[in-house]
Image (cartoon, rainbow, N blue to C red; front, side, top):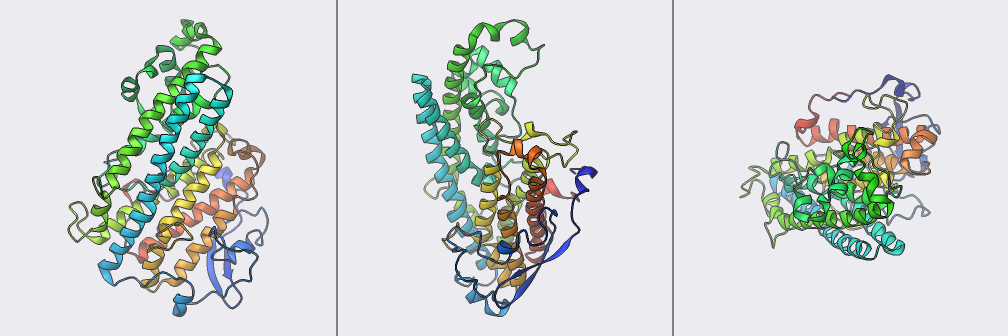
Length: 449
């Protein structure tokens, strides 16, 4: 269980009763927020259930919000089949339109990263280094959607049916050891892809590529008593050689990421190992999921990445909200401290949660958790989830600068973002799972914080 620091509770406003309203009706929403702008801070977004959709026209007149008796006016999704067939329709839509689509996009981005780092390593020019950095940003942005979708081969076998741990082969954060990367740099372990691939995941993956592409100081992250410092082996390299080696390291680490990206996409692809087929035939021939419900539970388990890893590790700890951070804030605990994309990473995690909830990435339509809720007569809960999504997306807007700076200079707004995402995750945990008769994943059972 993660313990939240008592000091982080001082400025939290009491739980208030929010309302998602349109021109003709209001839907009751329970939202916990920080009093950084008063109850009107998110009024516009909370009033627009579609405001977080990229195709929404926020300047258009507000549409009437339907009640549960008029669902067709709220959603253009086709009605779900009854029972297990409806659940399998959701599994198929999320698996194909969200997960496999994201894996395909990431494989393309990973290949582009290999190409860009190869050129940067070859020429060493500032222009090519910047191109490699841009390719890394694109790959990381793409990967953040997959972070939320660790069902099947991406997940760890100890937690996930069909898990093969491929997520940790690509982006094992927060398991990152910059000192190990520097040691590999001195020892030239990076120079052989096979040898680098045999090292601990904490010294490779997207975080290692970030470090070797963006760190320019020429210094290392090992302690003064580390052998690379006491022996003088690091100093002997010189700044130019360190820079050259880091570019080569970035390229070979990118090759490993690209190979695992391909492996993960093939694992899901119907033309490959077809894990997608395993998921969408849950309870109807699947060798892994003996019921449609068990397949749905695998997806809901994956979405708990929002509850634990995003709110706790990516936001809460850097903001000093948990005992893992012994000081008022811990900016060095952010996910991407060198490329400064940590806040964008969180936004993309939230987008992936939204897409899985809806069954497709807007404006495309698909069968999702929202359809299952409405089919079970819980349209009001669906509206509250959408309103909570509105609040969470709106909470990004006041934050200026990279997260590692904002946790100090804009602390209240970072905490408000943490609380808004946690409120959404709590709604999913406490109500959506109950209505859909789903169970908590093992890694969060008994977590009452």
